[in-house]
Length: 158
Image 1: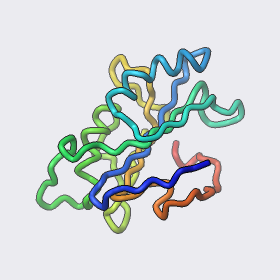
Image 2: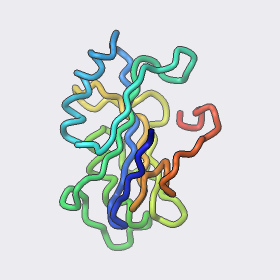
Image 3: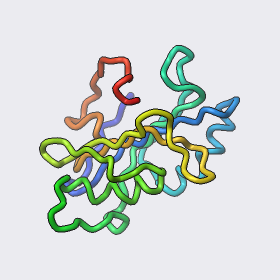
Image 4: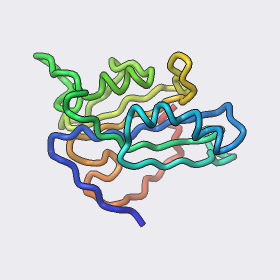
């Protein structure tokens, strides 16, 4: 059962996709992700083993994160990326992703930041971030509040 979550119109809502390839069991993956999960304080999480025929190996995590307003960067004059962009920098840097690669949508209310290739491992953190989605005021995967099916192989994320 999927619960409908409501967000403030000013909330920057993130989907953080992680891949941990070098572990042998789910318990080890969860222990490795615990420090990051504690820092990001997601409002929802999903963890699963990667499909043997899929693009990723090991274990996957999907975190739904809504940072408090005081943890967001301030918007700079002339920022082309819209209201979601200022919130991207702190979380992207925490995950080891380059915020300069953020691609805003046409409305400027959301966007995507992809690792392009192998998941990025930041410092000694084993989490391997590979995708960061953001949308202002809504879940980036379900902006209307409903679960939707997405077709495709996922190759466009690499």
